[in-house]
Amino acid sequence: MDNDFRRVLMGPGPSDVDPRVLAAMARPTIGHLDPAFVQLLNEIRESLQYVFQTKNELTLAMSGTGMAGMETCIANLVEPGDAMLVCINGAFGGRMADIAGRYGAEVDKLETEWGQVFDPEQIKTALLKKPAKIVGIVQAETSTGAHQPIEEISKIVHDHSALLIADTVTSLAGTEVAVDNWQIDACYSGTQKCLSCPPGLAPVTLSQAAVQKLEKRKSKVQSWYLDLSMIRQYWGSERVYHHTAPVNMNYALHEALNLVREEGLENRWQRHLHNYRMLRTGLEAIGIKYVAPEGHQLPMLNAVGVPEGVDDAKIRRQLLEEFRIEIGGGLGIFKGKIWRIGLMGAASTGRNVLLFLGALEKCLKDQGHRFTAGAGVAAATEITG
Image (cartoon, rainbow, N blue to C red; front, side, top):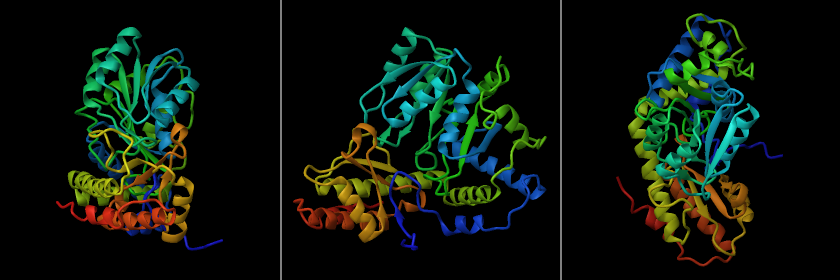
């Protein structure tokens, strides 16, 4: 087995991790009730509030990957029999519906073509047809690269007296996520995408309305491990023991959030957007097209069609073996049909864009695919500012 694990992580996650974050993980482990660690958690909460753009008191990092964030929001807000509308335009909307059903929700699925986004009127029509207590939607659908606008949908959801759960696993710290301004009631993410921290924690924030629903539950949260009514006491002033926190992972998240704050949130969004424009221009120059429509393409997750006659898996294998570049293949109905190219966090650099385009051109040439040699790199270098 090759013991050199160095890669350029340009897939759908995890992303490259800054050396400062890796160094933070190597600090001596201390107790999860140690005053120094308690202070670290306070600082993590403040930084997560900054990244989520919220003043929500119940803002924390759940022990577990991004899917623990999804399940946390659903487990705590859904009671058996609650009507929940789940918007599905890719794999992770489908996963949200699956989890909600497991917790006893009466799930109504609103579906659209993979790669597309929802018009707010579709949400309004669905809620008029069948009222719901909760609406779930994915802002950044990792399986399709589609960027779903949230703000207008949130207004419609609240006009119908429902709570909004938003998946920002791929988008947080890579593009705008305005929890308070958009009135998102429960928002979750993962550390391994645009935060550029190893996988293992799931940032979560709940609005006051969501907290009130949690407090008024008639039944216990069905997951003991994810029960925020208990976990909030550990993250709060009481510091009541619930489970042993992953101390070194929190060191890593703390440092990753420090890097976000040093760069500045808006600067970080602009960096992701600029590098996406470079990549898109380069890919279009060699005839590769995006799955999501113009104006709804994620800047950190580029889902593009595999050219006709090109072997998807062979290209990805050659990129990994010859250039040590990892990209992702398609999920579900897109399996074998698309590539998912990540430009997340520390991996979102102009250098990586040019490295990838040059490597991809070599791999496509080896398969006999016809295009103007060097066109991708040349076009990308024309994108400035």
